[in-house]
Amino acid sequence: MIQARRLTKRYGEKVAVDDLTFDVQPGMVTGFLGPNGAGKSTTMRMITGLDAPTSGSVTVDGKPYAELVKPMQAVGALLEARAVHTSRSAYNHLRALAATHGISRSRVDDVIDMVGLQEVARKRAGGFSLGMGQRLGIASALLADPRTLILDEPVNGLDPEGIRWIRDLLKELAAEGRTVFVSSHLMSEMALTAEHVIVIGRGRLMADMAMTDLIAQASTNVVTVRSPQAAELAAALAGPDVSVATEQPGLLEVTGLTAPQIGEHARRLGLVLHELTPRQASLEEAFMEMTRDQVEYHAHSAADAGPATTDSDVSSRSLA
Amino acid sequence: MTSNTLPRPAVPAVQVSPVSQRRVLRSEWIKLRSLRSTALTLLAAVVAMIALGMLVGWATNAHWASMRPEERAGFNPIDRSLAGVNLAQLAIGVLGVLLITGEYATGMVRATFAAVPRRLPVLWAKAGLYAVVTFVLMLVSAFLAFLVGQHFLASHGTTLSAPHAWRAIVGVAVYLTLVGVLAVAFGFLIRSTAGGIATLFGLLLVLPGIGQLLPSSWQVHTLPYLPSNAGSSIFSAHPDPTALSAGTGLLVLCIWVVVALAAAAVVLKRRDA
Image (cartoon, rainbow over all chains, first blue to last red; front, side):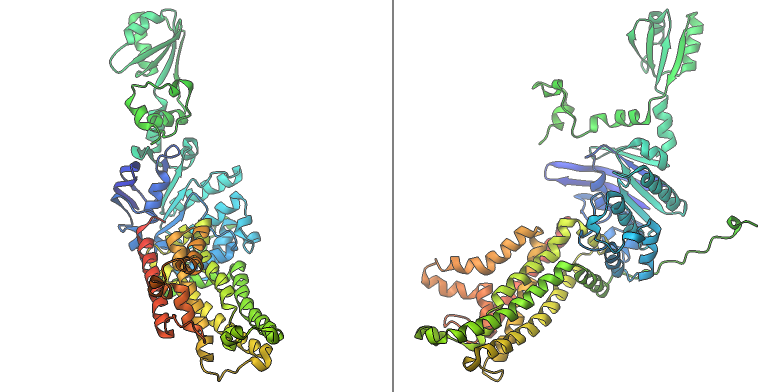
């Protein structure tokens, strides 16, 4: 169980994590989503005591990480950048970490088997492929059989087989009753793994909900309507929570009403419909929609490069 | 009955003990032994001590006849045989910095501090282990360098029973040990290999040279207190008249080391890893 309370991290003027409050529950995989630079890694570094919060707090099993007596048993962490001395063998790396908690050699052998590194365990970790490096990172995280796992972008750069392996492993660990907290900038990846999701953008909490709710919310927004009397229909449907867009004559994109509602309106007004299609916005679109204003580094289009902008959000986003 | 109806064997619970200074020492000992570069650098320090003792002894003896009178007056067979200390301190200093900056450069430090979030046990373990390893190796090396050096100095040599001989041998080991601990502290303070090594040897080797440019009335009050000068008064059998006494030199160098370690401890606790 991870509990963040008004967690904030500032680097000088820049706010990396802004007043985050959330709980990560045991027994399921919780996804931690946000675009690159949203503050996911910084949050995870604060959970594992590597960075100190500017204000607020974060605890694991009710205690700040630095106060844990057996930190590796409470939390196993795989943080984004590699955390292995390149000249040391995987086996000696794990042995050195195990020694801090008096963990036996046989457990070291066990985790090496578990992640499938038997063949290369005695070789320099510096020569490992990305996938082998991730496996070694996971072996270190699992050493003390932790109650909570924190993984920062664990599938980054992995081949499909490796991605699937990690996905299955995370679900299995969660099914054993552990807390599993996984960050990603890919919504689609999270949709396959996580039951619950916490979304942040520019350090702020955007959503904290069940994955099914997020999916439901994301897929009920646009309905495509084709009608020879499109203009009349558009006028009839318009309302405070409804927006109707027309890209070509006879075609409407309706947001804010479901397909049945539109169909019933049309019948009441005696209008002909040729097509009525609820369009499922992909999760990726929903995520981008949610975090669009929160992305830190936009690719600058020609229009963005113009000197005058009245959008205060855009101007505050310019690189300090 | 098929195999998948059999109960899964219970996975034995993993035995996990609380992090302690003793366990962190074990961990750091495994780290120290498992890098080939560590062994090679220590070997370089040993070879530098002994080989230079031999070489300088042989060269002095071979050119004795052509030495100028003032050179002979300044000659001391104990100091000659221990000339390797200057070279050995390079290896010991570089390795001391690298033990820490190597972890920062590779990211290993994140694993280290995730395992030991209180951090200070890591500092004490690294400094303590490196001190013990350096002291033992350099004591043996200095002793061998003395014997080999006296052997090659032949009739100009001396014996272990000569005054200051033992103080010089042990003094060299103590000096190199303190340089090693100073290097570890600089590694934690500066975190980058190049910066750490440059700062350490700037202090040890460059600052005394710059100090020579000060007015001579200031030099007396500053130069002997620099770490390398204070250090050489610990082991020098025939010291410079302006140098500190061996005991004062040791005290001054210890103060440098303690201050550097304290600064490293404060920085380590405060800064993000």
